[in-house]
Length: 251
Length: 249
Image (cartoon, rainbow over all chains, first blue to last red):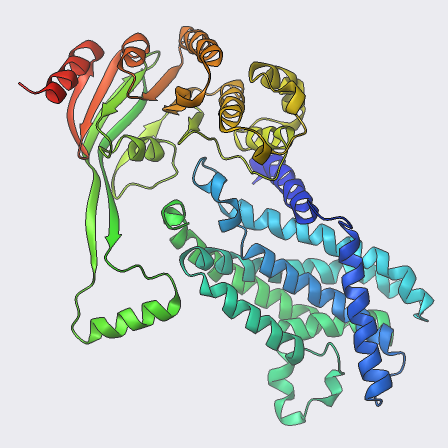
């Protein structure tokens, strides 16, 4: 693992650079995009539909950011092997490093998004509390979960390009099946258990507790995604290693 | 001492009769198979029972007609393809130049590509920064250090690939027809680099149709035909055998 520190570093920088290459606004898009989403959703939910939450933008934005961390992270990692075809077909190194570098580049991006959004959240009336220091822990746990999902996705996508389509639909469903634009309290009690076992629901709830409710996330808010992430990582890595030998042939 | 040992190497490719890449096509294919349709691909052995060893300080030439398995062998040595049977033991770091490239990204600049490739080869960033100038200088691309790779000509890309690969100090250098697109001046530079490389006791594996190059640099040569080892031994003998085979009796 330590042998690859320099390699992971240079590949992460490469991924990050490539993400914004040939784009006029570059990294600014990472801020404009969630901002636009926030404005649109706020307009819809607190002006058109009414009945939204109090101070809807602060309710929404943190959830939106952790969701973007997951959705962009996994959909970028999906292409991490195929997108590096010249490397995969020309030189040897452990291929999971490509997935890890893609995930790390995304971690850098999301961290910057959060940092840039903080002043905005404060301006919107969020009260800054000591709970904010818990955010890195939440993001770290989410990172494990993202990596666990990314490994099998990236490997399978080399063999079957439909994984990309399937994942796009899954993410769209996920956006509505997680408490991003509504409160988790609204879910009928008959579904509550199933609903609350979704690792992303727990991540979003943790973030919302930190930024909106100002309460401490419960132990299971963090344990569910961490456990889910570790299990996924185990199975995901097993799938990855099985598929890895023929990457160069199938790519 | 042996630096490279290849034992009973077999590599199989599948040639599908109908390509199935989507899940839908695979489901349809699986249903058809349940219905009694036979699985429709052909097996193609690109390498069969290949064994040889290269001693330290020696270089190996690999010759044979198109499709004889030369490039497949090189890719297995580079650990890009995994053999179906047999094993490869290599001592030290391997730098491959396959199909005229070392794995550059078209959207990265020359400099950025050198950094990524160099770290893959196990060099530290600080070392690479030190060697950057000499790499660019050897490739004669100092002016283009910040140009994106896709904007360089194929000859320039090859020059950069060659320079960075040799500059990472490999113990074994795998070269697949790499000189073909370089201009005459660069070819001369490469040849003297080859000599220098060999004189330090390191090993080259040269896949080439340029028999004079093989004669000049390789002590041992491997002749492949349709994936099978026709002969392996002293270069002069094997090259002559190849010429005899091609010209006919």
